[in-house]
Length: 88
Image (tube, rainbow, N blue to C red; front, side, top):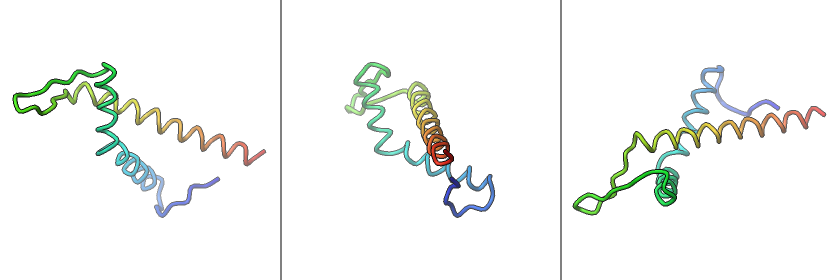
């Protein structure tokens, strides 16, 4: 089952896929994921004197990367399953 896309080269496809997927892991999703990680004790958060929440991004980013990698792997595996079942 070929991908429907508007990009000519394999590099163009890969770059566009990466950029679109990366957008999912910014903004609201990232905030919710960090909130989850803090709530369940995976990441520590502190408040400064003004009450702003401070989180060490070097601790958070590996979690975000792990979720992104696992998600992309699951998406590709699902696509592979669909292609395999279409061939049968």
